Length: 132
Image 1 (tube, one colour):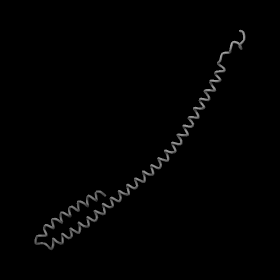
Image 2 (cartoon, one colour; image 1 turned 90 degrees about the vertical axis):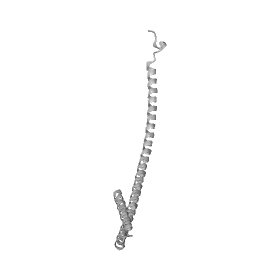
Image 3 (cartoon, one colour; image 1 turned 180 degrees about the horizontal axis):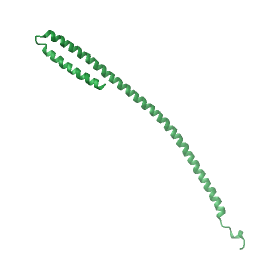
Image 4 (cartoon, one colour; image 1 turned 30 degrees about the vertical axis):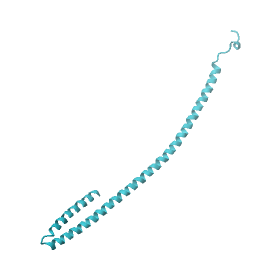
């Protein structure tokens, strides 16, 4: 698309140069023939300018369409990431709750273990043991 625009612009510049050349020659004696050529050149320039304008408008329209598609893709990706983020936060909260429960269980088991150990590992009192 850009190459076509550049080519059209170069052609337009060439045609304008020819038109200037023809215009400078109009003052000579061959006014009739050169006048026809200059009209043809002007007509070609106008046609090329119109094509160039169309090409530029198409280029702008296609870039706008591309931008709209990009924005839509980003919006969709954002929505997906937001949903995933919410799901992961909920899962993280659940895992934190489980960790808290496990810590509480560990503390409970530690307490039970120390009570059992305390009763078994205590030395007997000399009074209850009797004479040796």
